[in-house]
Length: 217
Image 1: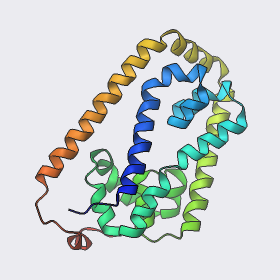
Image 2: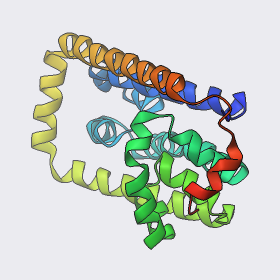
Image 3: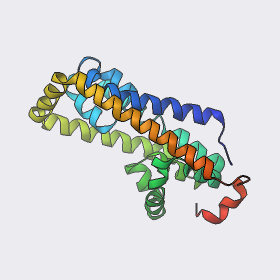
Image 4: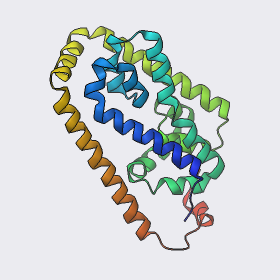
């Protein structure tokens, strides 16, 4: 079967491990090392929880760079490998499940999909459809900045509930960290098992030239 170059796999692997570590240790990091948490994983929850305790400038810079880190990798996979890249995406169960939905949304409005929800699937489809890299970057950056601005404004408008949630996290930081570490570990094991099962079921000799009949990108 088709395999992407190791540099892409390594980049995705490092970012995935960092994200899982952020999930696992988020309850401990959110209060004492909020910017370190954002380096590991700048999801919406972490951005919201760290907003009150961090200066807006490093919060924006780190949050933006971390949110954008994975997107060029998937865009380049789509750009260079097109149909083969889309087929490769099917090997990742967590991404394959949303592939059809994202392809439908992307077909209706590619620019809007990149602007609003530039996840792995959308970014790979953008590359496969030969969206101009400059347009992709402009849409991706604009959507990310707008999302961070919205999160920052929401956090500023809800200081009471946010502080109550942070107090709860601080009080139960160790049990929450253990719980999140367990959940992250189970998720990783499930992903590895699913990939192994999929690899075993994949017929030998399945090559990339068969993909053009199965893809509309």
